[in-house]
Image (tube, rainbow, N blue to C red; front, side, top):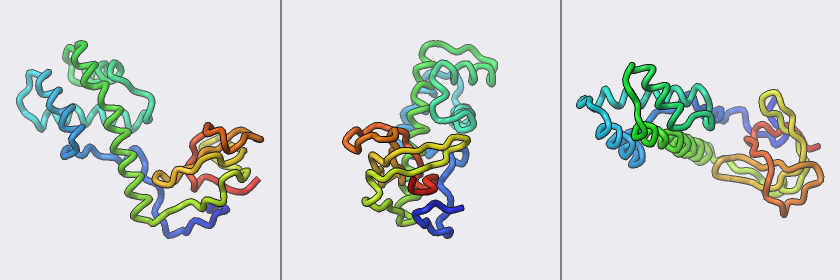
Length: 176
């Protein structure tokens, strides 16, 4: 079922984290790669990119906010059977930021390419949204057009209070 706002069925689904790839031309990705090259004894850049790609893939499977430099260093040292250190933790600590940056870029491209927008007149309306196993009900207190998301506040919350649960617009199913 499409949400109440009549989003056309022809719009491709929102990009998924698991479908994301590292853009090695990205300046931030280059910074991480250079630091990893300096840390490593390995000289083959493609091999080192593969190492970082394993971390990236691991993060996409586990979720956006589940990993940090330490957990990625443990993962990578287990994968490569090598010794990690404080520098490796610091370097891999940048990977979640890269993932978020690339994912945000992908979402924004999806919004622009599909000419998506959320009508401003929904601000303040009470809605019901389904996210995973949860149903969220409350007023829309903020609209983030570039990511095609809304903030849903607590029932009775004023739209002047800009806090709430960020929800993909397409998960809003009806006006409450």
